[in-house]
Image (cartoon, rainbow, N blue to C red; front, side, top):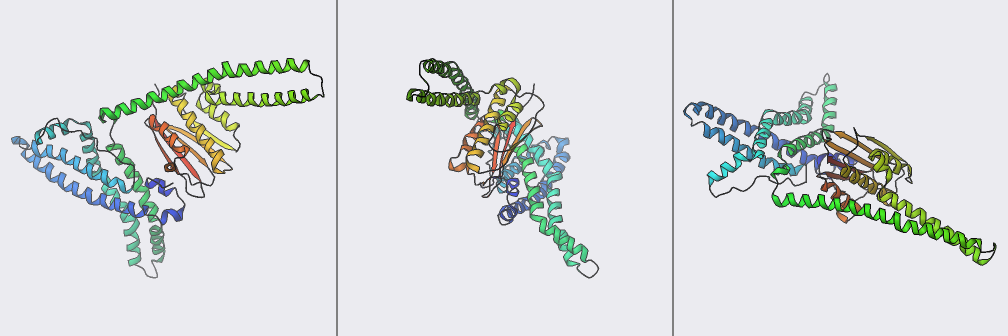
Amino acid sequence: MRPTTAWQAMAQRPLSFLTSSWPWRSLAYLTGGVVVGAAAVLVFAAGLAAGLALLVVLIGVAPLVGLVLASTVVASVERRRLRLVDLDHLPDPHGRPDAPGPKSWVATRLKEPVTWRELLFTLVSAAALWWLDLLVLGFSFGLPAVTFASLDGETWPWTVFGALVLLASPYTVTSWAGARAAMARTFLAPRDRELGAELREVRASQSRLLDSFDAERVRIERDLHDGAQQRLVSLGLTLAMLRLDTPEGTPQSELLTQAEGQLSSAHQELRALIRGLNPPVLADHGLVAAVEDYAGRFPIPVTVDLRLPERLPRKLETTMYYVINEAMTNIARHSGATTAAVRGRYHADLLIFDITDDGRGGVDPGAGSGVTGLADRVRALDGRMRVSSPVGGPTLLHVEVPCRFA
């Protein structure tokens, strides 16, 4: 699968990463960060000085307001620059002014929470981020240049060190670019309350659809248990009564033996289906126990490492179980893997799951694979799912879902 972020790109095989455009995109992102940050410092310093100097006569309010609005320009530029190292589109959360004209535009912007987050991001960027960009670039390229320029018989160890730093620069630059982009997305991504009414309704309908799927699954499980399974039990009793009147060794007895074997297989398959639809261990003991139980019956060895502080909310627990269940089913059917692993952690109101296997890789969600359905389930919980699956493997499915315990 084609990576969509700088960090995903680094997870590829070294040769694939080094020959890709991601190191160059990361270099362009950090270089642009230095330019934008330095310009922001100059503009803010000049505006702040003018505003404070004129504040005594109340004229200084205008430059200070101008600085707040200038931060929206910096944020807009940053959203465009993010496409260099994060291909996921980051929408502009600003709303349209209620009326035409600059006065309405300014009033609307000053009322929006995102404007003040953008101001905070601009201050952080001007005070620290662009300095860090410059430091990373200086260490990755400036230090090797200095050691090469001073090459002589006595300083050759430093030259070797500079060469090693230069060789590692694609990873140094890309790792910081990925971290910087993640920080920028935290500041600049729209919050739910800033989304339009139509988009909020879409998310609400996704949640209702997920609830209806869960309710339908429980109904089907109940109908199979109380209906089809009971009929199979009754059929088994009928065959047992018929065997009492059938002599051993006759053709009819052999047919009864075959029918009983087929009935037993159908009963086992139905029980497995019912257990998969609504596993009792999930309802009784939670996600960790349910995943461990499923892994114990998996056709290949699975390492389960789930560390959660407590039981998850019911809808989240059920959804994540079926995401993990389906991901592992795909591994068994299509990957050719010999081992797999499920790892889960809870950190800072975020559930993080990694499902890996050592199979042949080459998973492409864009080709209509089962991964698409998993991503839809995760998005219905306001989560994100990423897949790294280079041809030849390994495959990593990374899921992040918001979660707050009461």
